[in-house]
Image (cartoon, rainbow, N blue to C red):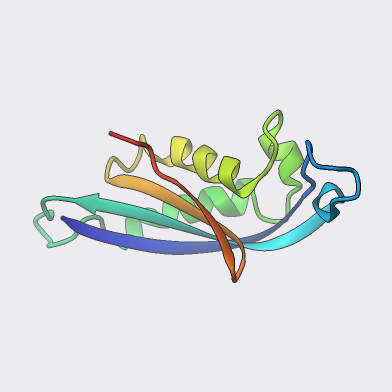
Length: 121
């Protein structure tokens, strides 16, 4: 099995719901997000790639247009804009264009990340 990944970054704000009122994440705050898309394939294409990284520019275009410098509460409504929900949302958006996609990782800080990977494909 061959595996590749590529990172993309953007800045956005959000506030989380369903937390205790004194929790700091209930207040509007921002993150410098890092999104990592993970792709895999048992076979390489004729060039010797799982996927040409250049093809993944479509993901950057989506992130720049729809997520960068946005309030994720607006973008993701009615979902609570947690890293976990964002990872699944991005997986669902990108999977049709990239069948080799098997996971999306969302990092809000250098020390935390959430990964969405379906149980089976």
